[in-house]
Image 1 (spheres, rainbow, N blue to C red):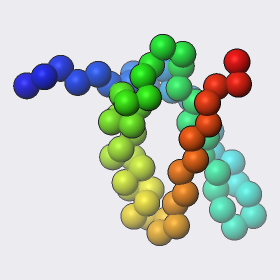
Image 2 (cartoon, rainbow, N blue to C red):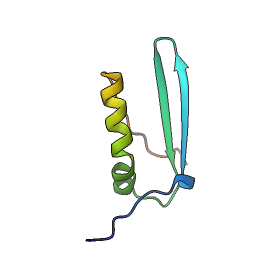
Image 3 (cartoon, rainbow, N blue to C red):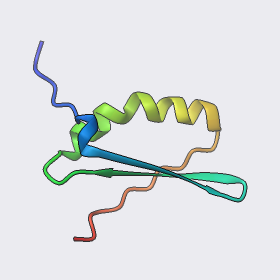
Image 4 (cartoon, helix red, strand yellow):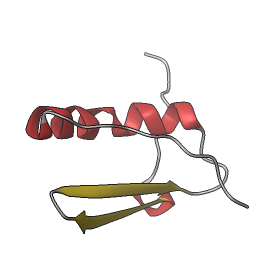
Length: 65
């Protein structure tokens, strides 16, 4: 089996913020982590959020630095 790059928990910051009838979840990934590794690592979590929420929308933003 090939080694699969994963994102370590210490390289992530997750912020949940209530906005009226919704919850915004911001996930910040430390510099140096690959986007592909982040998608693989977060895929199971995003799948659960999609199933639970029914109307999950995922937006991607690049770093502002």
